[in-house]
Length: 144
Image 1 (tube, rainbow, N blue to C red):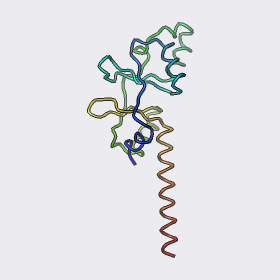
Image 2 (tube, rainbow, N blue to C red):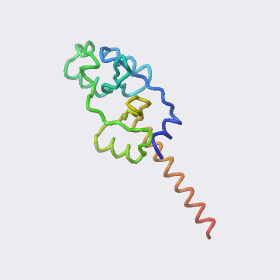
Image 3 (spheres, one colour):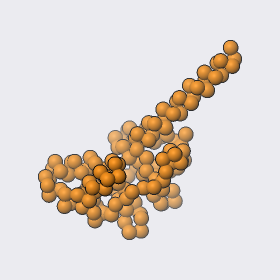
Image 4 (cartoon, helix red, strand yellow):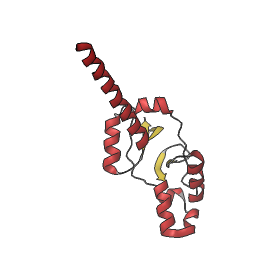
């Protein structure tokens, strides 16, 4: 199974934010959309980084209420790992687990086409495993 299958089910709409948005604005969008991270894009929709709930919490812990006026561009993770639609679920899971992040932007031709979370990847892997088990059961039942 590939990331394309996840995006087909989940959809490819991606909520993004500008690097000039304040942390207060980031927090409001995260809460409103019920998501854990936002890709940070410039005016040409080029991916610059990603800002997550963890980034917001760390900024608040380090800076107190002043963190709310900091900018997404100041706090975002700039060095990104990305996937393509052809990335397998196993590859994405391995990358996310090894690098300890929970949101993976999906890029095709230099354009942001989606984002998957660790929850999306785990759910896809569980469904894949269930399908394999059902196929094996059917095979064994048919052979016996």
